[in-house]
Image (cartoon, rainbow, N blue to C red; front, side):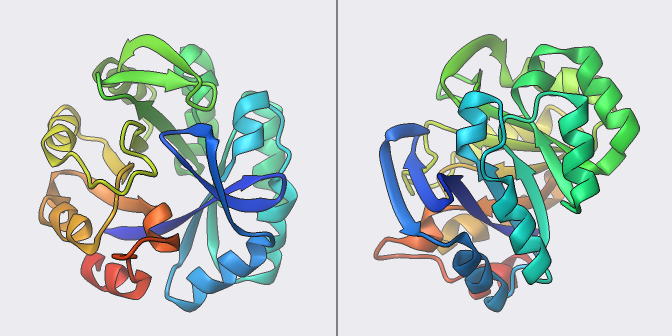
Length: 243
């Protein structure tokens, strides 16, 4: 079970939000290279980098930071945030990013989803973000769709995608812990491999997810709990538990 540190970028700074609200922004690093170096030193082999400016506008504004991290540090990167056309996917992958994360456009356009997966295979990861009612959100979590997480997973299955990131945005950034009961429902609904995100707050969450890894968990994304809190997660320990 891969443990993946998250780096969210706004205006070139490494930040975290609570439940996707930009009004809750907290900055941790002015230079995201420093954050990437820290997680690499603590054992990470992948980074989850999200361009929050791009997620809102549909135009990548922090890609250069991901590319600089890739150039300076021996680490793999999955990058997302407002990637909504074929040319952008091609350009990002050609620049050397290992995997692109598709959200809004993939949810809205089944043909785009299927073509992207067909062309780039495992270099494309689909991201599905859901609220407490199980409905999928899009456009950087700003708009609730009329589609449930389970309906969306079925659509992704039809595209032959092999990996899906599922994020519980009702818990994201809260460090309240994961909703294991609901995650089990998601895992039971499909044979796809999942990367779990949203609410990771303590090392016990990693232990609990490790116990159900064989239900289809490929990885876990940790955000705010690596950056703050009295029970701040030690990345080295999390990686050891996930191995």
